[in-house]
Length: 466
Image (cartoon, rainbow, N blue to C red):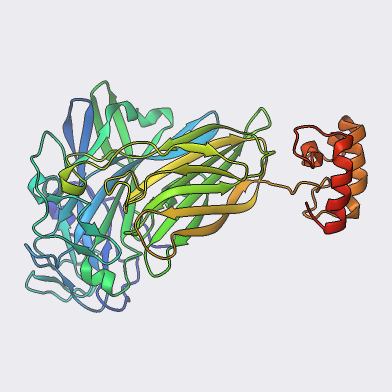
C-alpha cells in the first residue's frame, strides 16, 4: 500500500510545493502516477445536478520520461469520479454517484511532489521523478474535457481531436444528481477519485497504479451543497480501498481479463436481524476496454433470494458513440435454477449499451437466507474477444448439494441418519443441523420431503452424489 499524501488545499503556490515523498520512485519505464487530490471547486447546481472539479498532481515515478505533447494523442488524460458510502440498518452500500469527462494535459511542469530528485524537461515530456500539478479551476474548464468513449484505457490509446458536442451548464465536469447528496454529518460518507491514462505508461505495463482517492465532507441542503476535502490522499490505490478502510470486513478481489485489463470486486456480507444475510457487491473496472455486461453468482434452487438491487452511474453531455450518451437502462435481474444474475446487452446488440466501462463501478445486491461460503462468480465481457467471460471465487450464499443432509460437502453413508430425521422429524433435524436445509432431502425436486424421495436418496448415496 502506498503512503498517504498530506492533505493539500489552497492556492497554486501550495500545489507546487513538495507534498509527498512516501511512495517508491523506482518503476521501470514511464510511469504516470497521481500524487494526490489537492483541491476542489464547487459549482452552482443546475436543473437537479450538482457539480465539482478537482485539482490534480500528475507524477512520473518511472525511469523514463512521460510524453506530454498537447494536441496529439501522446499526453496523459485524467478522469474524475465521486462515490458515496451509505449505511442503512447496518448494511453499507458503496455506490458511484458521479463521473466527469477526461481532462487532457497540455504542459508538463518540473516540480517535486512525489519524488525528491526531479530531472526537469522543456514541458513536452514529464521528466523522470517530476510532477505537474493542475488546479481545480483548470480541470473544470469544459473545453479541455474530452469524452470517455473514444479511449482505450488498457492500451492508453485515444482519439485527437476528441469529440466536442455542445456543452450545456456543468456538463463534462463531475455531475451528481442532487437526490444522491446528503450531509456527511448523518454518517453518509463521500469520496473523490482520480485516475490517469497515458499511452506510454500503458505500453510500459504500468497502468495498474494510476488511481488515487480522498474522502470529502458535504454540507448544505436543497439545491445548495458544498463539498470539501478531508484527511489525506491515498495514491496508487483503487477506489474500493475507501470502502474497505471504512468497513474492514469488506473483501477485495482482483479480476484480470487474460491479456487485457483488470476489474476489482468488493464484497461485504452482513447478517440481518431476521436471520437472513445482505450480500453487497461493488464491481470497479480499473482499465478493461472490453468492459463487462453481466454478473452471475452461483446459487442452488433451495436458496431464497429477495430484494435484488442494481446501481450504475449516469453518462452526461453526449459521452457515447456518435455523441449520444451511453444507455442508462438497468441490467435486468434473473433468478435461475443455478444462478443469481444480472445481464446487460452485448456490444453487437448495442454499441452504446449499458456496460461497465473503465473508470466506473456498478453495485449488485440481494438478501439470501443462506450464510456466506466460497462460491462462483462469472463476469461476462461486453466487447468481443477470448475468453467471453472470467470466473472467480467470491463470498456467496452457501450452496450445499442435494442429498448432503449433514452438510459436510459430500453425499455418503453419513447422511442416512440425517435424511431419516429430515423425513420423519423436521424439528429434530433442524435442531441437530441448524446450518443445513431440510429441503436438501427433496431429491425428486417436487417441493416436498416425503417417501417419494427415499429411492432417489439411496441412488445418490450409492453414486456419491445426486
